[in-house]
Picture 1 (cartoon, rainbow, N blue to C red):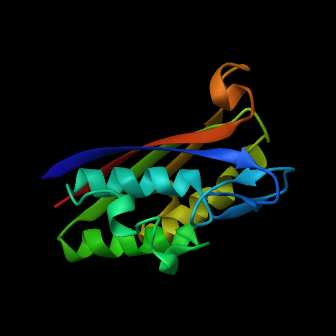
Picture 2: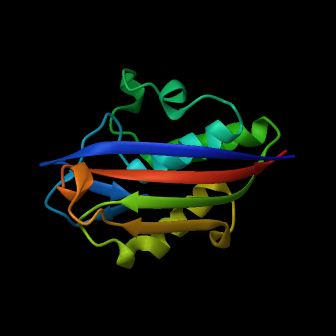
Length: 157
């Protein structure tokens, strides 16, 4: 049986934080604010996988009020999500994700993001798609106040 899940996440941009997307540290004057490393892309993917399996969401699995997850590496969190799916009898079919950011340009980092996500999820890089877009200066992402990500995942039981 195939199941599909959707994930969405957003984090505010702020000074004095690293910008990490897809497990890649990207040079930028601002980074994402959050309890963990605030990797908005990996959080959206984790939610899409958990949603497809009806296993809750990333906030339930890794609460933001738990000190154990302060500055946590979201690649490790995504690995734990993939392990939870496997323990519940699911295999990841594919992942398709979009990052919405006015800046920085993400094209140079996409292949490394795909490789990181594939490794964390135990799938081939060909099963992972990562795209980036802007909102043409509109909204909070267009005004460089934050970065958002959407993800859709297919899992198989």
